[in-house]
Length: 529
Image (cartoon, rainbow, N blue to C red):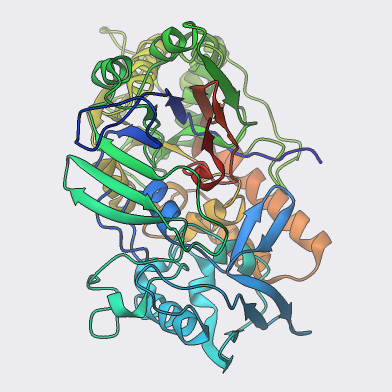
């Protein structure tokens, strides 16, 4: 069956077989350990919140079901039934599962975890399922029912996500809850969090009692290192043997560094199909900025040379993107107007909208300059290079662009607060799209500021509400087409490239594969020969 991968994250992974001794920093050949570089600490591993590393959480916690290229498959639930009215999901749980602390995984544990998530509903409002759950019923020790207020077709998809509907030992709850912190991080997954020194390293040990079989790789260590040259040198010295981008797509190595490692001839290279779309998000609701004008956003779209970005800056590791979602995303294969690179078209749009060239080359209208800011992730070498290239490109059409590098957490905060004009972002990947990204159009925590300034905002939000609950497949397709057409015509999501997950690994690493998410790899399937 043909694989489906969505929207692009330039997730760069480099694996190099080195040895690791029993002490940090000393490596002996023959040990069974992967050590990966990360620009960020794993942070708070509470799976019911959003500050922790998804790559780390994915090794420790599990969900009821799993999103695969063949569709939703069993994970902690062996099977399930959906009621005729679509409002009750009954799950039959595996009976051979325990948490890392020895606590049994059962229906009571499922109920406690989901109830804890629901008691913090405001935090999870971006997930529409959180607004539909009415009750979790324990039927017997290994059977649990999820009762919804109305039918919601993405239920299983949203239950399969890396967080928040995953399971933590009830012993780790604080006063029966998780929203104000937890006492420990005991999941049911293939790896157990061991030693963690903040901003230094975190070590994960294989779960010897894992229900899915004992992992071959015994230890996985996340080592905090600055992205770029420091990580590259650490790979060369054998201080780390694995590197990948963070959860927001900041690449820890540039293409040249990756190629140097590959050109040594000792490594294999694997790339997924398109997984997400990297894009510039425009704040249509920022009325004190030119970005609120559709014609300005369109002009920016036309002025960006995606071919040069994908072929030269990204060295062909990503492909040009012309729509919010690539056509291999479910419901996204629709006919939309293509805005190719066209500087003259961009200039014409601005001129017709009243933006006249000033003496300094910057356009003006009603006494204000055509100027704005673009925020990029300071930890991503490629984002910085792309931002500089786009800055130069927009100067040609009379737009003054100031680029500002900030930490990814700061950029995420700006997206939520609306304190931005333009910022780099990316769609959420195959396991989430199109449902979650589109649901986020209405969320304060995500893209509400991006969409609420457009003329058809109310119609857009109405269609989003409808598409989430309809049980008519033809109507669902029609609604998705309308939704994607509206945001495309308004140019609030300016696509740049479709990215793939890239892995460079030693030739004797076997079991290398990809998941449907853009933030995780199935480490439990890997073997060092």
